[in-house]
Length: 314
Length: 286
Figure (cartoon, one colour):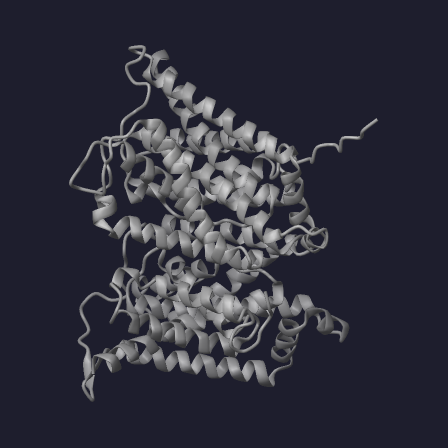
């Protein structure tokens, strides 16, 4: 690989790591803060991607809309729609014990996948949505990819800021209380269901934003891009590896695990064609094994979550 | 007549779901976590059957037995290597670990047998007609063997010491431990029974449809629904739940587009969890 190729790859790598970091930050609010087991990340990711794609593409007979709106509206719309879907799912499932929530969330993700795949009028089915506009293209000729990366980094920072702020706020404290001892939190008069629902919707909206960024980054989306199992699973591994409850950990985990995943891809690219499909399965196997090793050897992750010190008034 | 036909197909699907649900219900009841790798244990059993029956051309009963034994061993081994380490931690850790195990099993299957669809036999079997109902010999065999396995399970749970201990632990683990039951032994047998029945379900699913590395994963939701419907930790409930889910799934194709059939078990499950979280047979509550 020459220097220009390496530079291009680095930008591509970091852009994707940024998208995963946003997903991991969304999951951190749900799992790290509140202890909710959302196994349907791919669904909110996909909903956000489709929402923004339909809002911003020019009108097309293939799917609903497009409405040709500015990209900022697409991003906001993605967050709102993913948040609304999250609210609907949360209302049904958040009263359940965590195991049941996990089962129900994977069921919901499956339903959303079926809708994206089968409702041709809405999403153009398996053929997907094409020509999703890229923001910032052509502002400084020759620097499109770098500008895009800059935007993604800015969004990661924005999500980090929102997450950190809510973690320190009384709201975040209630979430941790619910996670660690729900009965005690309720005894203090906190409506645990309502707080859970808020945290769930918060996380889903952030995941929706990640979906929108993905759609505008790649320019084309189809149901295949949102593999319900793997897209969800790798984000979980990222958060657990980085440190559940720690926002910096979520970002670090996203970069590290995405690095491992991309690194294995480079190795496999050099293998002969006959064993490439088998080797693809081996990459998934490696990530699965990595999760087990982390769970056994360092369950708190690279950067363990630590609640902020209480402020003592003088 | 259409309804009767769908009902028969529902019994067929139900018997496969029921065999899977028994394992999920027992491991959930005894170890306290929803095992997300159970569907992939089914797939593993199905492919072991493929190896013995199709690739090595040995008799069917041998393939079925080998699949059951091999999957039971794998299930116990996974527990020894991984799940055992997490028993003192929150049950959620077990669930997350099992999610990883599901992917590990599936990618192993893909590495060994490839991602393509496989069939046990080439050639097409013609469906016979009995009193106007179409059913293949294979499908009759599945129902008969499933009922036989259920009968064996009943014998095991009712008449052997370890079977009774298993039900006791599923009912109330602390009480069982206090009365001197060796929990680790019960846990091992839980995986033997759960894994073995999952393998049988996988082989039957492969006979009825075809083999794919994600075949078990796609049935997992229906299996969870059956286990919850029947009450967690209640093997008989899980069997009943399996038949109910299978029959309703097939009958739903009368009113729903076929693509959306997987939604049905989910709807039943969520409805059940909201209305009666202990399941029809009053298992562990949420």
